[in-house]
Length: 72
Image (cartoon, rainbow, N blue to C red; front, side, top):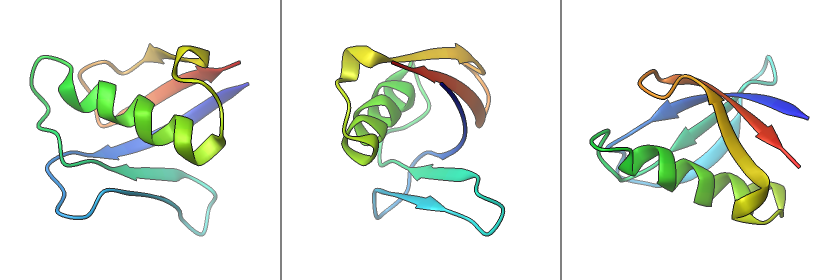
């Protein structure tokens, strides 16, 4: 399954939300440097979707706010 996500790094309150369209927004406290925000997004998504961290792979958007993840 592929999931499109919008990432908001440097947020005060880490959370995962769905908007009215169904797009998932992930707010993380990590900065967007050296992949720290990407790792934090994987952790947040694994808790939100209740899957293992190893079951989530970043496919597209390594340096973008809009990302596509593959979930096993």
